[in-house]
Length: 67
Image (cartoon, rainbow, N blue to C red; front, side, top):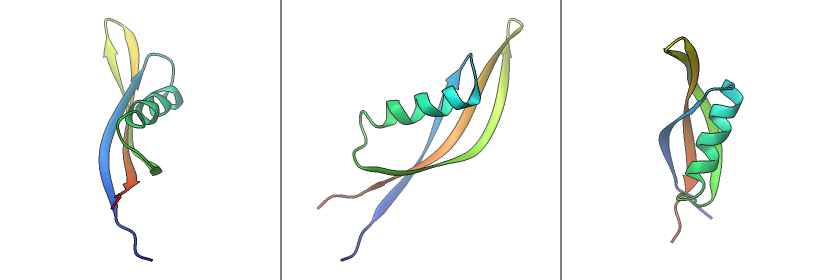
């Protein structure tokens, strides 16, 4: 059996941690993308807004194409 997967970039943000940012991104993506397979962290950074830190995580997420 052959399978085909699509990979998309997503970015999550959080004012708490990079973990929370990644979790929020995957949870949100799973609402519109079905059968998510792998989420790979590509970049992590922080944005400073008015003295507060905003954690940002860029992920590659793969999902399986359906017939």
